[in-house]
Image (cartoon, rainbow, N blue to C red; front, side):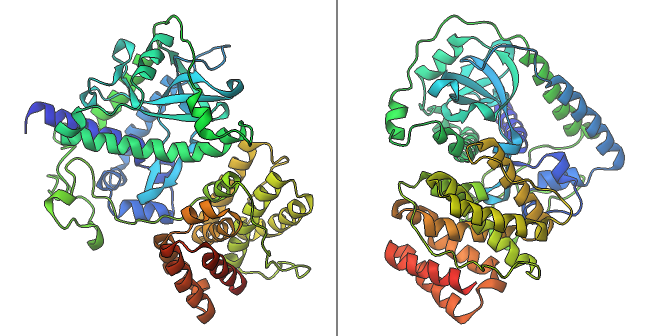
Length: 492
């Protein structure tokens, strides 16, 4: 292994942990969540961190606190503008996602302001220079590089901390090479793997940002027309002065953690044994079937082609639909929810959340009142003593996003996250138009929910409806899919 390959391997591990491993407050929380247990089933990096001694952990916490101080927002009265570097809000865009990864929002460079300075085109930033390609745009002061091939749109409310300014010239250079994949990705396997990881992160962050982004556009405006109009003159640069200190702090973490006694090996090929402690056992169904199936830089990923969509993802499918299909609610009226079980409550909360969002979009006040009433009655069943406030206005996208996150956190603590997401997925599929229905309901997702919500799907009629739904989803028969969805809903 040459020096360059070793540097790339080390850098790739650092990026992997930064992007898709859970932060300390989740990793060290007790008891472990369902998602964390699944992540630990294949991620030996997180398993190593959990195995740290008390002394190592305390030292790690001190270094982490120092980094947080270095990352404190710079004082500025300026509005977000092209050429600025920002962090993104973890509580809105981060969290568990596909393949049991925890997605941490990256730093981004704002490229241009879009609709009324409320949305911004942004490109992802990486600070590991060993992974840079010629097509990437280097930031001043050796503070990382921008990925022109990895741009997406965020809402102003997604911006968290102002880190510094590079000037609009850098943004202009990025726009010039936008969406151009570097040629080096084919010649250097680890670089190709890095690009795939970064694209995965951008895809998830972009999907989560979509609800608030699209809310700023006129309903009749097509997204392709919006994309076509994103050109804006750019002006004179200002040199970045603040990001270097942050990078030094991040590097200090890597040095501290990865040089324990000067002997810890930080980026071995999966399957080899560490000299001091073995990696976590890889589940049998995640073992590669051929040498080509196992990538050399990061842990083996579980196959899991389907992951339960979040509440916001399900609601987003309804919001993006051209029309909202009118369906029967199949909800109990006048019976109350005093004796309802937690799994039934979670299912109905997921469904009611989607109903609330749909009612807000359509302006149906009676449907909104009914959904609000159900949520107010049902949320305490899974939240216990926690207080979760409903959004005052359906126009407040930040409040809706926060509300959804709080519900999911409460459901996770009570072991009802899967039931909650099943309820929202099922209702969003019933309400969405045909185009989004085909995206929401896939054979793999149908099988995923049937296997993971067994206590609710074991009845004869529901089992048959799941079989029909899976077959019709594979065939693309939307009418049959809707009948099967209604049968499943009625049988719950």
